Image (cartoon, rainbow, N blue to C red):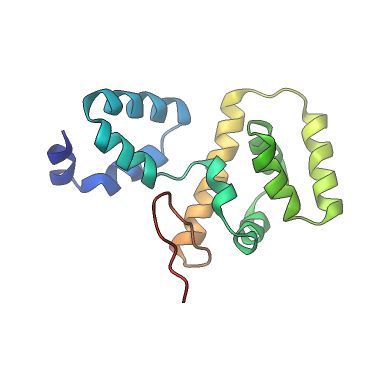
Length: 148
């Protein structure tokens, strides 16, 4: 199966497509790929950036991302992640901003998973835009980070 992908535009094209579909669709496709070609599925997963990978960004990069993100979207996005991700975000905000964000999240109450995933995708798109512009560096799984 991997030869088919190589001729059709390569793994990067598959990653690009998967990064632009909703999480549910992405999961179904990855699971099907895992059955068909586990090595290819693993390679694709390594290259994908999901919202939870925000913890892999350095603090300065997170701060740049936060300047571009709408607070309400951020509150929604953080509703669906574990404490490690939330704390990494809160640590990169002023105490006051973090406190206000926590209040927004509490005040919001339960929200639909689809809304959480949509907000997360918007933030991932901002991260990609900043990475493409060279404003931030995303350390991918399995990649050595070049430091000069």
